[in-house]
Length: 111
Image 1 (tube, one colour):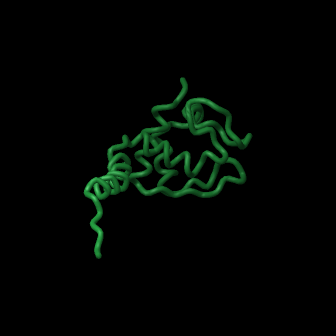
Image 2 (tube, helix red, strand yellow):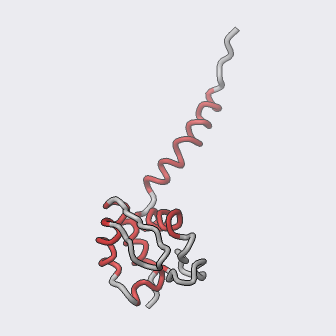
């Protein structure tokens, strides 16, 4: 005998599968940039508005505008950042991610 799955279980499964995807799509570019930086850079850099960098030679991202024009970092992010602290790995981001990262960096800069 075949059992039918109740409609509410199907709806619940659909919501738990689809809603996180929709939320990610609706996230602001800056929020996506923060996620990208957290995933790729937080091992060494302080990514947020507060906190110290885990790696002493890695500047907190909120202070980057003291040395660089934030918009000027876009090219390095797209072509590959190979400078920085001596043991920094090279990162290359696609254009849509570069824009999101720049938006986030601009939003957290300390004056």
